[in-house]
Length: 368
Image 1 (cartoon, rainbow, N blue to C red):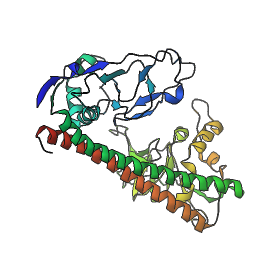
Image 2 (image 1 turned 180 degrees about the vertical axis):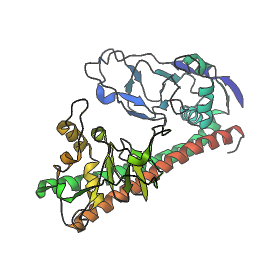
Image 3 (image 1 turned 180 degrees about the horizontal axis):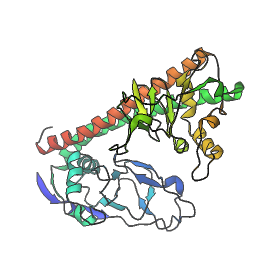
Image 4 (image 1 turned 90 degrees about the horizontal axis):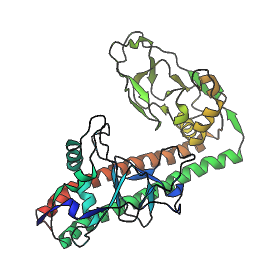
């Protein structure tokens, strides 16, 4: 066992995409889940020549830690592909691979203890940051390289199993999407307005205390609005299998099917249910309303002066293929299997993260 200053084992990587060999398909952002993700930035007219290269086995992180879920945004490129990222990121690599294994270092970073450490050691007034110097000043205890590799092997096996499971998840989603596209080409579409029943039940008696909203992932979530002093009598009551959506944000995906008992949503929301479930399953309709193609179309048809809205009258003009109820149920079953497996995949990722702290602790205690 030996103690090192991390700065003696890592170096900055400042090579830029100056010849523009890499394009937008190689551009990545980083999430607080310690993963590379597709960028959310508007890249219209932006030159990529100043973007940094993140080569295989390189790390990248965002120095700003304030308002970041008490986590540091960091990821390890464990693929064979080279990415590019904003020059505001810090990119680095292990300069002494005979002393420190890159996967072992990522396990070290991928622990709640490191998130707490980086937040505690972040500095600044307007924005708190964990700088490159702060990163280099970390003192890390390391077992021998062979000992590191023993624990990395366990970690890599878990990661590969999770990724294999995730690939099967993608195949299941592709099957569901393909089935829906096939229906659209093989049968006529119908207006859904005849099946929609508006819900106008207000919370006048204050019996519903559970206030929720709908996020861009088509999910109900606890409201983020400060409710102090707000009269919830005008809020709309949502029951099981009711739909609710924000008419000003539906283009982002803010529409969901409620699966709980009861909740109340802001009076600005549109709420409806299906009046003939023997003809149209709510879950089948939700499949269509959760598609990105539908979200984009709502932006095109939305109307308004101060801000565009997609109200319930416009919703009634939406057309979809409506097959026999047995076919709808079969598609919904496939989708439900996808959702179940997606949740399991999320749990697997959480377990891997939890295992990182156990593996690091085990390696430092000399457990083989």
